Length: 142
Figure 1: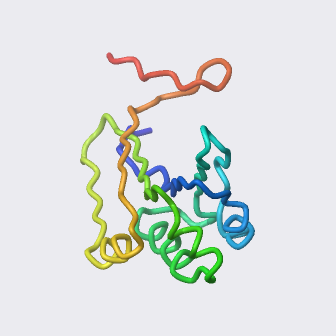
Figure 2 (figure 1 turned 90 degrees about the vertical axis):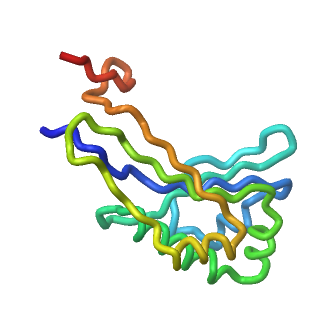
């Protein structure tokens, strides 16, 4: 199996001084809740799109944007009240060529900016396998 770089997922990380429960209730079946907790008087909510399709950055971004743009007023007020809104793209780095190239179109960037969100990018090191207790094990170099 080739160790090519590839897109893993897109998380949406939100921070607010207000509880996200009403927003979660609206988004219900459209997202996975990866994290929802209060930390030092600030709430953190991390979401991932609920999809069975092969995810790609553009599709995931479009799905999140469509959901957010269609929020009813009470849920949109929670969005607008966030102290931080970040679309966090995750990629796994590879050991084989070709290099991964991905583009976020100007239209999507404009929609993200209009919603007052930032973009984060994380490139995880290539992991060949999982070891004991499900922990990632780094690929050993030849």
